[in-house]
Image 1: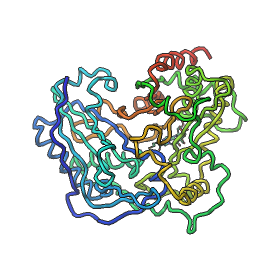
Image 2 (image 1 turned 90 degrees about the vertical axis):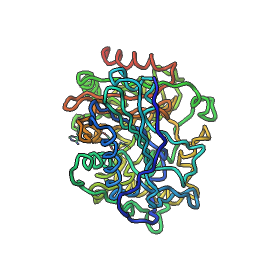
Image 3 (image 1 turned 180 degrees about the vertical axis):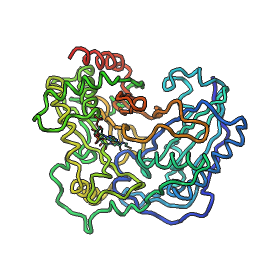
Image 4 (image 1 turned 90 degrees about the horizontal axis):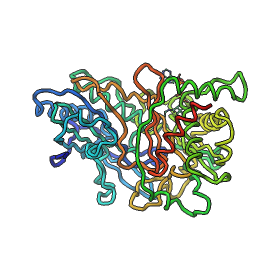
Length: 454
Ligand code: COA
């Protein structure tokens, strides 16, 4: 089984686009600052593959005229800060061929060629100024099906913005006019002038302000980071999700407060399961990282189609004993409390706090060459990111909707969890997760068993 790739080329915007430097917001430059890999599989393509490829290339070039930041490059400036140089250097495009049929990839994510279908960034050998912000790989399979693997810089976009670009590219590829344009002015998320020096008292729950704890007795997370990991996708049927919701809502603090959402209960259940199977000491501190979209939490809300990072990472913390022995409702409310702290005042406080930092690089994970840098949500922690509301399904480039989409797994670390929507219209959810190999089987067993038992 092999994937053969042609040498990559750079696709530039098809017309001259604005050039110059854009200041990034503090939220763009902190948290996850690497590229995010994702893949789409399609069963059908045109008989004329070369002409279809050209249509994909031409339409991405047209779409980039409007989404020109993606064709630029990052530049580092004083204090570990980054700027976006809109220089139309282009996005990387790779054409590839796999000597298998799509039907041979029964479990997409765990198939040996999966990682070869998504382009990756060589952080060790590419300078920041040369690093493409968007890398695309289109792979044709023997059956005529194809996949689109892409890797997009989290400094430039969050999930909502990445999918805005992708759905507009697909629209242009289908021959339709561009839909709502991106809102490119990041100054709506700028710090106060001067930035405040006293902060919201909940700032310690902002993930970049307080790194997650290490295992007791260990001064760094290096040991845990270096353990072998594996990935999987676990489906939680609507019935299982409803059972969890029922169980958590029984123990709500007050009857009048709103019911826990699917995300809150599934995340709480995953946290409890991880604490149980990792055999943590009862007094072991453990944190859960949650990513929150701030678009509708700002006052006024951010402009529609704000293009950039409009997310904040928060953490909830407890001891392992507390998370395991308290009720699901209690653990869910810890997660909810962290989410509910995020309002306009809190976000501005975080931005000012970050603006006041002399060196922002300690809040970034750009430098993957050093093993102990960047936030680590592995043992004894978890990071559970919701993709439930991301418009990731139904991306049609003119030959039908995808048959499968999911996250890439190449750079996944222990404790990285994503919660995805199950099939359209049903209330099921999918956990895409990475854990240490020694923990995965126990996690899978206890995750399901403990829902049935409760
Ligand atoms: N249409 C219809 N109903 C919706 C909806 C939509 N677009 N969005 C939310 N709802 C309803 C759902 O019924 C949901 O409850 P349910 O899942 O139990 O059915 C309820 O509103 C609450 O949804 P939400 O406000 O999204 O809360 P949550 O607990 O599911 O998620 C956060 C909490 C913090 C994860 C979520 O608000 C958020 O910010 N998600 C985006 C994270 C993100 O940006 N990820 C990508 C990072 S790059």
